[in-house]
Amino acid sequence: MNNLFLIALVSLFSFSTGCSGEEHNVEEIQEPVISSEIKCLTVYYSWSGNSKTLASDIYKLVGGDLVEVTPTTAYTADYNQMLDVAPREIREIDNNGIYPSINNSIDSFEKYDFIFICTPLWWSRMSTPMQSFLHNHSSKLSGKSIAMVVTSQSSAISGVIADAKRLCPNSTFVENSLWITSSQVGNSHNRIVSWLETMGVISIN
View 1 (cartoon, one colour):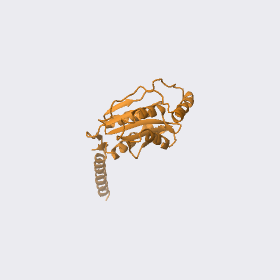
View 2: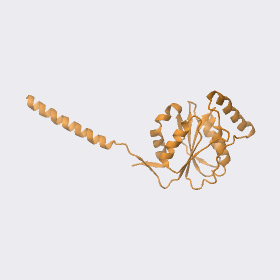
View 3: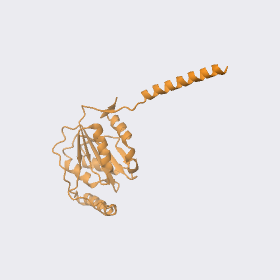
View 4: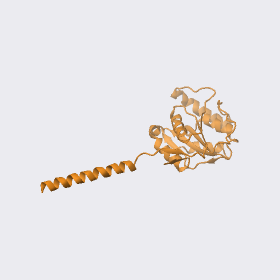
C-alpha cells in the first residue's frame, strides 16, 4: 500500500510541474511593437526630471522625434524660489498675455500623426514653458491629434488640460490624458504601454 501511495505521489508531482512549465510559457512578457504607419512627436518640459522620464519612455516605445522645451533663461534649481517664479509667470500669462521666452521652434508638424505633450503641473496649471510652446505653435498644430501626459505631486490635472485646449483650440485632444503622480513615475512603464495600446500607437505581439 505504501509503495502504491509513493508512486501516485510521484506521478502527481510530475504532472504538477509539467503544468507549471506550460503556464510559464503562456505568460511570458510580450514586447510592444511600434505601428510603422503612425508618426509621432514627443515634446516635453521638465523641471524636476519627472516629465523627462515619462517622455523618454514614450519616445522609446513610439519612435519618431523627441523635443525638449528649454527656457531662454534657465530656472533656479531651488524649489522654494520656484514657488515665487511659477505663479508670477502664470499671472503674467493670464493678465497680460506675456509668455516666458523659450529656445524651441518647429517649422512644421505635417509629418506627425500624434503629438505627445509631457508637462508638469504648476499651481494647478500647465507649466509656463510648455504654455509658451503651445502658444507659439498654435496655428501649426491646428488639426493635429494631441495626447497630454501630466505629472503632479497629487493635484488633479483638469487645469492643465484646460490650458492646452485654450492654447490649441483647433487641435484634437485624446480624451484619456495620462496623469502620473510623482510617486508613480518610477513604476509607470506598464501604464504607459497600456495607454499607448488603447490609442493604437503600439501593439502587443
